[in-house]
Length: 311
Image (cartoon, rainbow, N blue to C red; front, side):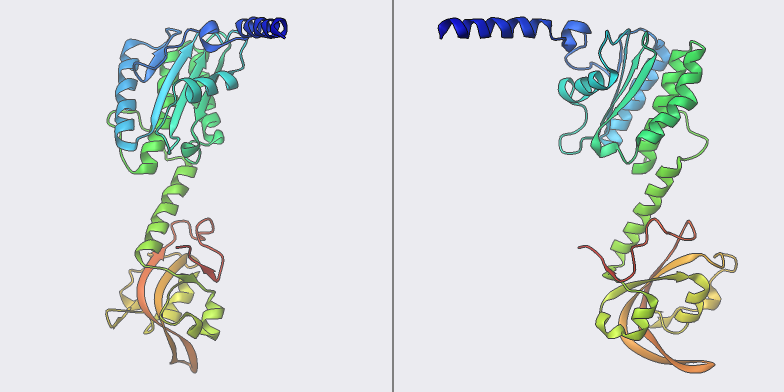
């Protein structure tokens, strides 16, 4: 038995000695001293200094922690395994509980790069966006041998995306010509969620259901979704704010597109009879607020009809 144990221990020692590790293959510091770890020596001093400043301000204003690492070679390791080990196991980038760290890795001789994105930032920096900025900035500059500018531009795109999503600015960082579409949609969704929260929306009934039996929503704050043209007819004299009716005549002309979606929030009081050519019963609501959809359909942010808002 003792002999067997000795053999097993010897095998384990031999195995561990031949299994490649981070420290055995590539000399990576235990912790990054700055936000730039340029082991390949491809980033010039001015850009490295600026990037360190940008990334420090980014972490202070957003808590997102991004580090740029350049190496000469992966030495046979896959870039996926290597970047994961550095970002998650060795450096543990990002805040605990937020998982908001990013490792931007460039391997010079392998001609490869990778973003290791923490789960908490995947909505801001999805794979499609990371691939797009790599093709747009990194590859063209790298082909010219201008590694510093390529890394600066790609990093700036990531920094701007995170800062814009949070609603802050990072001083001095190069600005993109336009905000990425997925960031625009995230901003719209945040504004919409704030509107829903601020106005205490409890239910999203369909216009038809609310008209047929509004009493099931009595004393509840409901949000109704329709086109603006329909709402002009439906809300005149019905939606009220502070006891005063919402005067359609005061709405600036040209403010809305004819088929633009709007969300109107009101507190259900019951039914009310009004005359519009014919005498009809419509839901009687106290006007609370209106949200104008920035993309005219609002299809990505409006819940399905008759949905109760999660508390």
